[in-house]
Image 1 (cartoon, rainbow, N blue to C red):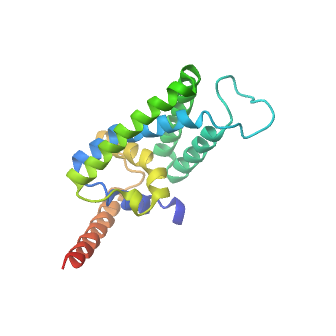
Image 2 (cartoon, rainbow, N blue to C red):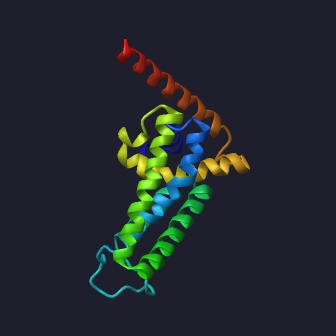
Length: 193
């Protein structure tokens, strides 16, 4: 279990994202954050000294490495939804590579900065105004960054298609989220008193 415990990951992330408006904000802003981060990672050095076997502008650099890690992790969590998330992650890498190559570094970093600021501001507003809870990244930075794209895709699949990786998944996660939120609320009340 541990790192590939899908229920555990979704319960953690779901405990920070129960407000429908905050969830919608995340659905809009999470994938652009990943996409624009990959634009910047396009300008990192190659991982190998030999020429890339991929056609230009696709490079085997840190953008590719992060894409591969995300894709493998998603596919290991759930084959169906994870494979879709992995494919979308690779499409983001391909698209960001072409865009970064076209724009060049001097224009890319400005677009990335503006996009990141806009998207992160939206998410923090979602948490502060609607969720009334600090973002998950304050408690587990790696899990929040790694799970966010998969979580919002999975959420979209659940809402639009009723997707569950196995029977009872949604009920199990909901119970864990409610228990975590009660625990958090109890701790918050104790700190205030």
